Image: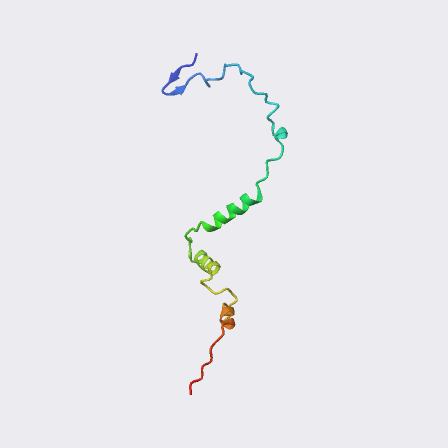
Length: 100
């Protein structure tokens, strides 16, 4: 018999004196018998990485903010190259119009 005193069990666990039903075989479910887990498909890994990359978090400090800006192309990469990002500018044709 189990008595409840102030919301707590006084004689221990409810199932302490109950015999198990032997529904499950404990030898069947050991760690050794489970084997290796199923590997995650590569497409799931790529999708997870894409979603993680797309979820933008606000930076916690100025350093994280500068790292984020550098990755977005808003800051110059170090060491500073004065002609950084000028590749497209060099490939642009300029019209030379001569007015007489």
